Length: 483
Image (cartoon, rainbow, N blue to C red):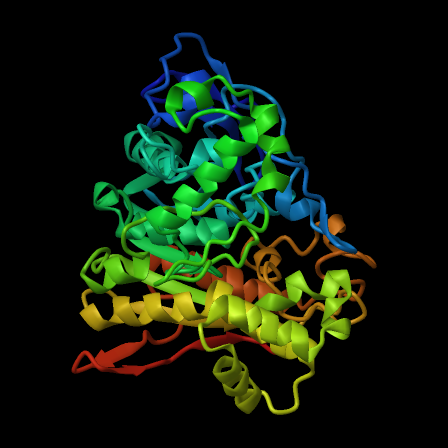
């Protein structure tokens, strides 16, 4: 089978031909972010005249190796870690072999703004191409290069990378058989929070037409004051001034070695708690939260599909054994990081979950603080405008991994969205899906909903409604595994 050759605005690329997908790996969408360019806006990639090989995956953003959470193997989610190479602002494309004006989906990976890449095994787009979608997965700058708020540098450079990738899609995707007038942006975890940020960004208007937010946070951005604390801590630990010139001279290896010094920084300010609860020193840095921007009208005409898993917080407790060992003191300590009145917050959650153990209560608090509350706020803000539909979902299938303790934890929906249940690393004693066979019908249903949303804007259930701009009626779809 001959290698497919596709012309792009920057130069021709040669990919791989399969029965259900033509695959192109490591196509640059912006210039290499090396040296001082790490702290600049993405620049156009120099064109190439000769055919560029797109048959092998390229380098990844500098990042720490993160194979697992405790006893859980998370390598399929995070990928291989840092694969060095300056030209890592790249994307992968899976296209139906005879695609013509097919819907396009652009995926932004998660990883706490610190890790992850398009090389993660979960993000193989073959199933999307099989079902008539051109799938694009995107690398973006991580850590200090992507999100450290540095005076004199544009903020949120990782977000700017995603917008640059969307501009590449608009310029080039028709050559791969995609429709630049039908683009769905979607992401999970940090990638979903980035999707929220792009939804709220004026510069991204018109570059995409639908959005899917999987376990993101419409209230997940740092304030300028919070970001300044991280920058001060980084500069102090490095022994340099917080300027672009001095940070540009620091090699990537030192930024990675710096991460322990940034862990646990107190980001509480008078009006704000730490939206990431200390899990990452990096996030978007915005003057107003994405949910607030959407409430003011940003992204109102973009159709939205948004949801969470029902036990998000389990990922941060079950693999470490803390779901079983958590105490009432642990629950109170977490509540104190979330709310200025922790006793009232604990009482509220205890009333909601009267029979829950301390670990389950802690998981519920974590899940809402990191993902649930911000997702609900964004959904309500978007639905209030009634300019485009707002569809909501929950993922409730409970993974039997870790002897049944993992449950419907953060990330467990991804194998179903990508229809990747056959990936061996997801199974076994330490696999995300556990030893028993997962429900194939659930993958068919959930993947199909994402494909349907990309094709028509309808995932298969009614949108939420807001009447008189104050009453929000939810028609949330629940993915339970009983489909």
